[in-house]
Length: 111
Image 1 (cartoon, rainbow, N blue to C red):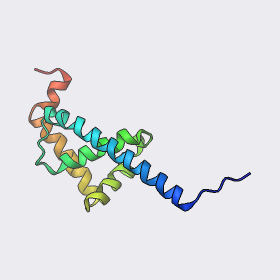
Image 2 (image 1 turned 180 degrees about the vertical axis):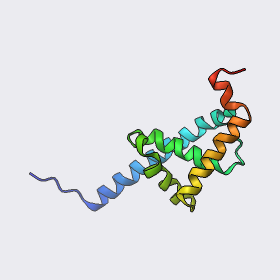
Image 3 (image 1 turned 90 degrees about the vertical axis):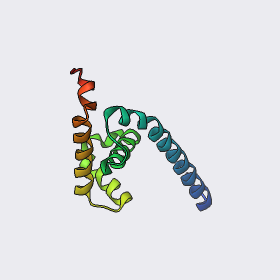
């Protein structure tokens, strides 16, 4: 026996899932912000928002871990209206900024 669903039911379910996904993404962003600050990544750096989006995408879709540059970066580029290479370059810049500000050195345990 095949179960047929009404289009309205499917649309309502999709909307519900999207709202839940969106709420979870906002919660992750909210909790992630202090960590990025502790790492020494200032919010005015372009890579900050890309990095934050990448972490959220990764946490919501952990199966895509091995394909970050093939799945997550293109999604971020599309969301922000830029190119994949610009996203990668900006994230690298944000990480370099954190390293130069001493934030990443503190994680490793260096003085």
